[in-house]
Length: 373
Image (tube, rainbow, N blue to C red; front, side):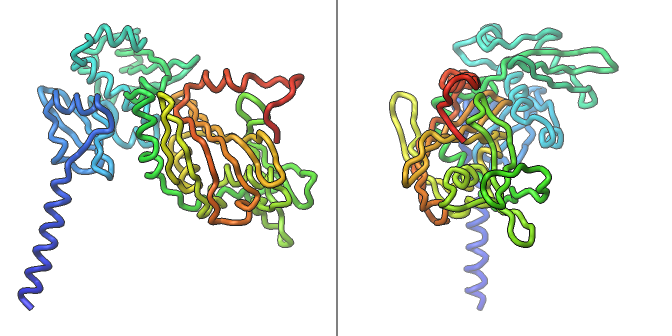
């Protein structure tokens, strides 16, 4: 009996030692550089936000549940504030203020500000040290530029402007982002999220019996939209339309409604920089959850309709960081009724918004639409 207890205690101790000594990796090369320059003991840090104070700098480090350091910066915003505010932009400010104090070997702080088009309209990077937790922080965005301002008793202490650009805000280039996409998307929890609205008054009747349209806005062209379709049963309950008799409307629902994605999978061929590609499988519900976690709005449009499938495009639009994911799909009618179906898809991720605008153009009702629905 004693030997069994000893073995159990030994196993628990080994598991503890293993978890405690998990080696932290870094989401980007720049974060690894900062950790090295500042001698940050990331391997002893726990998942979540950690504090570190070398040389009088209050530094915050975030470790995710997979022991990956995804943020290092000056501690300027409390965690509750990030949860209700724009975390991406707040953590950019924290990281960039630290980078200005410890720039890479190939650049000076002045070169960084010039190349990144970041401008202090009031104060300097030294002013950051004077900020207090009680100072009022305001963030606004206009014409693809953010303005961050700190005030105390109505007086502006610090103000800076910077572009609303993905690479700058995330601290990584598009090549790094493409390589990370598969792993990042797999973290999304594709749990059932109720998309079905309860109020028929929000909908419009369609030409299909007992079927109603919930308009969801559009992106660039009215044919790329977020419209969803619902059917009413004998008890007056509403459910997303899923019928091979109405493939276009049903496929639109599959691509936009997380609660009916179920076990359907995407076989994704991701187009990478340099004409390379990689393929992987991802649950359709995970794809939708990942886009929502990134604060993307989803829009759907049909390219062509064949006797057996719908060829379509889904665009995920992020207006905070000004990028798009574009998914081109070939959805067989059988996937509508088969919850375990696999759908073929090609992915271009983290595209700058102007690339998509050039591809699809502006809405013009006098021109023949390339997409329909």
